[in-house]
Length: 159
Image (cartoon, rainbow, N blue to C red; front, side):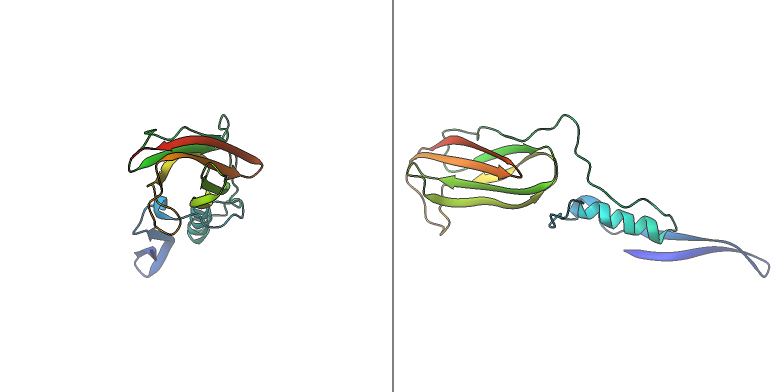
């Protein structure tokens, strides 16, 4: 980010100072990695507006009306070698997606982090366990766990 003060000079008088700022990246590239209840990009935007001379209210994270926590069926299913898992969150929070075998043993953690409210489709399973070894064909279960919500679905790996 770059910032400057721009002034208009008439004769030997300064008429008004304005602050300007140029950002070399889009706000979408700011990763939300704190579970403090406020999106990091909202904090950054608040800092910019404060620098520019505003006095914006402190940023807050407001749940989006109409959203709910849900876990979708993976696709494709059955899959080989990759599958995509989609889910949605009604509010920002910590999310974990685990894969289990039919005995209930943990095979792999696909996601463990903070996510913003809305839909997400960037979680991928690739038929490997947490040590990078290929797993056998068969039935597996994946579970979404977030603040006060859990849902499990079944998927089939077919080689």
